[in-house]
Image: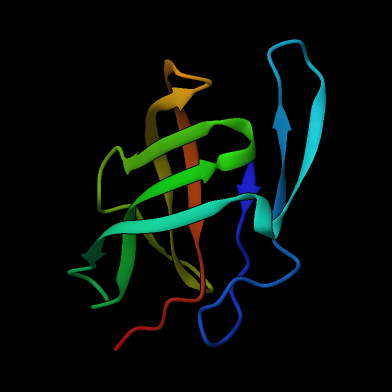
Length: 114
């Protein structure tokens, strides 16, 4: 799990971080600088006009992990007391040179409507 909290200028907050669970069940705490997150695509909501990231590359260089994360479907925007995007994602990539794949969940909050 990794969470990136954003400052108002879009940069990563120092409060970002996560946890890596290894196959043997041991864990390692991750700090902001342990992960490199690249937005690879964007989607604009036809409902609100809000532009959200919609694909990512997540790397943990010190762990030899390189993941590609893609939404299962693009339109997963919710309009509740706060409008935000959350939903299922598919994950493919490599860990230690071995192919891996999985499923996950992403939540995007704080992207302003035009």
